[in-house]
Image (tube, rainbow, N blue to C red):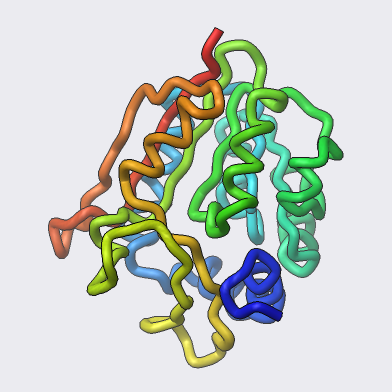
Length: 225
């Protein structure tokens, strides 16, 4: 298997499902605890959706948080172990589905908002997903994306699009075989929206209160007429 590929991303998350569930439910990840979890909840609520598709929902924490406010949520993930845990915890309609399934039109629904919370890690899969987002959204529907801030995540690497090896630095020792990810510059992220018939309305840079640096970047876009 190519170590820098879409397939390797899914393979790695399958291997690390159990420690990830523990990390999320025990709130072990500082940036999430301090900033990014509430940031994406607030962003979604600002769009006032009645229905949401959570793409790459993992063990379902975001779906549960949104459901608690009265929103109807469908969550999808390619990792069966994560969906199993999401179903057990409740709060949404959870389905095993890969991005390839979505791109192929196997997911038939129409929602007010699609949210991708740190779940857009690949190259072709992300472009393909953007290409079908409009078919999943109601008129004036919203797409929300939270991802690592490119200026922070770039590190010492060249500031250019490309595959990067993954790392579990700072995570529990139970994690292994980290997933690769495809780095995009801020310009590349911004360009994805108009390329696929979406108007970028807002961009937020939630700050980590300890470092005073962006913990992430959140894009809010809307279907164009």
